Length: 194
Image 1 (tube, rainbow, N blue to C red):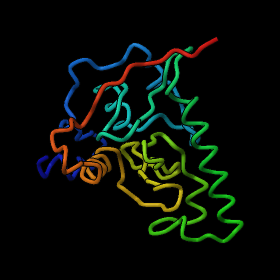
Image 2: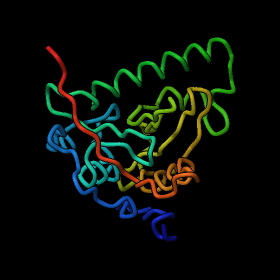
Image 3: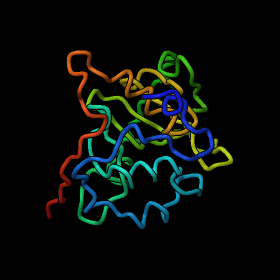
Image 4: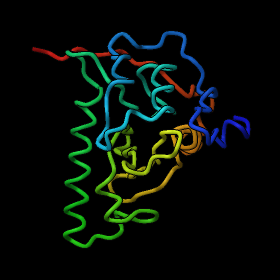
């Protein structure tokens, strides 16, 4: 990863080229029209870096650990809003309970109780960590700040957009025993039963 890729563009144009394009991306269940049509809780569309990432790589495991949920066609699992709405609801319940119990460590090192109420989940890791957008804090380029809640017990600000946050996640997730793990692994899509 070079310095430009590590730093991000800062202009709403994603510096995600280091991820590459998988040989066989999984896109058949992604609702690409919804990438531009859906509005988030702040009334605005998905951030440009998120839309670019989904269009570039489709559905799969990022950095060997993370699932970034795309909008999916009716009848499919692992997407927006089904999975993300359940994860966001769980996040809000845990943080509301923590606030009531005065467990202030769950907002450390970078967050606040007010911030926790403005966060919306868009990604989840196999370790139980959450990636969240900070609604109401858009940049002029339409990007949203990215936050991570590690095990629902902390809030870490990762950057102003995905192109800033993803290199940090990649560095943390890289397994020294498996340095050749690709930045992105396509996964199959699944239809809902019934």
